[in-house]
Every structure is written in structure tokens, then in C-alpha cells.
Image 1 (cartoon, each protein chain N blue to C red):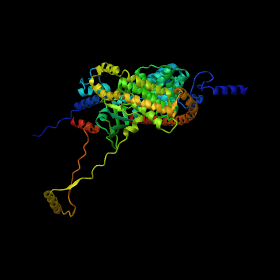
Image 2 (spheres, chains in turn blue, yellow):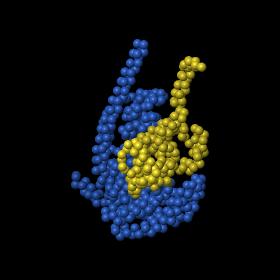
Image 3 (cartoon, rainbow over the protein chains, first blue to last red):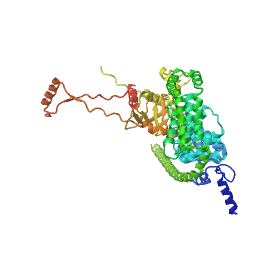
Length: 414
Length: 219
């Protein structure tokens, strides 16, 4: 019985590498051990009645006293149904608008996302994440990975893309597993749709650039190139401010120049990194697209931005004139570098999506193991912190009680 | 004529204290004082319009807490710069945040106070202090991957050695006579120090604590 299965496995292995598909036929990247919530369920939590906590918090807010982070964490811990998730969302909003908003704990945020996933409220989790200013939800990498994976398994790539954009805005691409998952989502969405609005292009550009800077392989280098190309396109069509405003990007002009610098680096470096043909195509198309209607775009822009006054144009004209004038140079440089890369054999013909899937299959298990180890350590740390906080709360309560008793005794004796 | 002893006016004293307490409780928060109507560029609290040179900046840039409200832990440990410094100076000028206290009454948590360590034109201060002009729409956040490049300082060329010159003859004679009178028997030549007193440029952030004390003292 093992032989036919082994034969089937060998046949599959000889084909083009398929994405890891589980028995249920759904696509999932993270292993079951990662998504497993037993360790989280097995943590020690205090069992409190939600109604009591809710009334306590309401009373504290009415008296304009600060609510402690322990109360809100107990509330989120003890959620047991979908309606209670809505109540918890309200209390998270209130906590964020209270004097203690800085002290929202990591474990509360993690528990909130886990509870949302458990009770099927992924859209609620995404909503609070997108409105992070109002709710204060800033998850760590492990939680981001769980959330993205839940969207990928449901094939909901639109929501997974929003999660990636949130990670980009928080600049949380430190951990390699997050980088790989984001690449997967980004390239999947790029392969599906081709025309985007300029905001989407800008977001895609930044989300490809930031993890691409951390990965030192073909996927990373191609993503850097792709990201710089998209950002350069937005820079030339919409102005530099459109690129860096409210984004974790630098305000210095010349994104297309940086794309060409990436190509130069790859061409001149002795290492093995290659650039995907798709990314090079995108850069080519961008350069042609912005050179051809150059006159048209610079006429259209002053009309659009008339309302914003001439001061903005003054700064931009300084910048854009040099950029527009450099475009023919960029085209030449691009053609030279492209031929050089082809001569050196550093152009990768496979699409970035297949490369990412390959990387995911090879490297994700090791990163997952590291992540799980860090997560367990963090769980213990959180446990210690929580114990410390509970102890402090009890000591304060006892002190308050003793003072109250002393005052009552003094009043009774006086 | 001797003054009559003033009888203690207790009710007035009590009224004064109650008024002070009410003023403290109902003081306008940062979110009310610095709220801005972006259409007409007026502050609703005081009814005043912003100065004309700020209009362009207010439309383009953001205030510090507007940037920080979008970051985890309100951007502790991150670097923030001002656009006016970027335009004015070549050397890196930035604040490294150490403490942030947002105003929780604001709807989008976009007002508040922040403290940090200043690095102005490459020279870092030793202690953290309150960040001045937090509500000005002039701030930019330095992305994490650009921090190293942004803070790299090219060391300035070494300044000339201390330029000290001998005194003119009359002053020199006066100084030596002074020395003889006070019994100072040192024989070193009196030298005049020509070094320029280092003054900060006009946009060096002033100390907020000193300003507050001055305001309190003026009352």
C-alpha cells in the first residue's frame, strides 16, 4: 500500500513544484503546528464574569478614573461568543481613548486576534487592524502570520493584501516568515490584476520594497526592483509627496534611479542573485509609460493641483524637472544593464510567484520552528508580567483598604 | 499711621481656591487648544487664523502626534525630523523619542506631548527633554530602513587650534601691574582668547520647561 503512494509522490515531485496543498484541497502555507492554538488555550487565565468587568469599566469611566490594562486583558481573555466580541471592540475603543492608552498589552492584542479568529470574526479583526488609530491594535509578527494564514486558507486574497499593507505601514517586516508570506500574497494579487489606482501601486511598491531589502536572494532583489519601479512611476505621475506622505518611505527623489542601482549591484556582484524577467519588464514598461506622455502628464498635473497653490508646484518643479530630464538617461542605462544582465545569465525566467513558493517550501519550516520557540518564550514572559501586575493590583487594593480603615477609625475616634 | 490689622477673609480665600481648582479641572486640553479647521485654517478655540507662511505646510505635512498615532507604542525609539530642518540644514537633525503622552480626549489621538533626545546638526544632547512645537505641521518620520543612512554624520573638518593672541601693550602693562598688586607671581604671558562664542542657529529648539517657568512667573 505504501508503494503506490510513494510512486504518486515521486510523480508529483517530478512535476513543476505545486503549492503545498493539504488533504482538504485548500491552500495553506503555515504548518498545523504553527496555527495550533492548544498552547494558547492552555495558558492560565482568570475566569471572570464579563458583565462584572463591563460594569466595573463603565463605572470607572464615569468617574473619569483610568482603567487598568489588566481589566481590559481579562475582558478579552474571557470572550466566549460572537456578541461578546462586539462588546470587547467597544471597550477596546474606550481604552484607547483613556489616559492609559499606551499600556495596552501585547498579550491582549494577541488574545483579541486569536479570539476573533476562533469565533469566525476575521472581518472584525481586519476592521480593528485597519483602524488601528482608533483601537490601538498593533500585533506582533506571530499574530500577523496567523491572521494572514487564515485569510490565505480561505483564499480571501483581498483581505490578506490589506493585512500586508498594514504590516508595511507598521514596518514590521523583521521576521523572515512574515516576509515570505507577504511576498506570496503580493505576487499572487499582482498576477491576478494588472491595472491599479495610484494608491494601490504605491502601497504595492512599498510593501514589495521593505521586505525585499531584508531578503538577500533573487526574490528579495526582484522585489526591490519591482517596488522601486512602481514607486518611481507614482513619483513621476503624481509627485514625490504622493509617494512619501503617510508612508514609511524616504522623501528624496529618484526612485527609478534606485531601481537602476539595484540592477547595477546585481550585475556587478559576484554572488548568485538573479532578477526576475517580470520585474525587469515592469521597469521597462514604467520607463516607456512615463517617457511617452511626458508632455501630457506635466500639463495635466498643474490643472489637477491648481487648488493646492503654486508653492507645492515650486518644490515639485525643482524636483520633477530633473527627474523628467533624466528619463532618457534612465532608458539608456536600463537597456545597457538589461543586456549586461542577460549576458551574465542573471535574468531569472521563472515568475516571482513560483520562486516564492519554492522558497516557502524550502525555508518556511525552519523559520516556523524558530517562531514557535520565540512564541513559547513570549507566552511565559507574558505570564510572568501578568502575575506581577495582579500582585501589584492586590497590594494596591490592600493598601487602599488599610488607609480607608485608618481614616474610618480616626473619624470614629474623633 | 499704623495700619489696622486686616481680618482674615476666609470666604474670599475659599472662593479663590475653588476658582483655581475649577480652572485646573476645566483647562482646555491640547486637543481643544490645537484643533484646526483645515478649510479656513483657523483654530476654533481662539478663533485666530494661522500665520500665512504656515498655510502651505499645514496642508502638506502632519503634526508629530498625527504621525505617532499610527505607530505601535506611539513610535518610541523612532527618529522624527522636521521639514524645516531638512530644507535648512545639510547635517542630520532629529529627535529620538523617549516618552510620549497622547491627549486621550482627541478623537484620532493626534495631539499630546512627547519627549526625546535631540541631535541637531550632528551634535547629540545628553538628556531627554520635551519636544518643542509638537503641534506644528512640520514633522516627518524617518523610515526604519533609512535610519542608518540618515544619521550618518560626515565629521566636520577640524577647527583651528585655539587662537590666542598677546594683549596690546597698555592692557598688558595694566594686567601685569594688577598681578603685582594682588601678589600673583606667575610669569606667563597674558593671552587674549579670540575664539567665537558658539551660538545656536535661530531654529534650535528652545527648552520647553524654561518657557513654562517664564510664563508661570510672568503671571
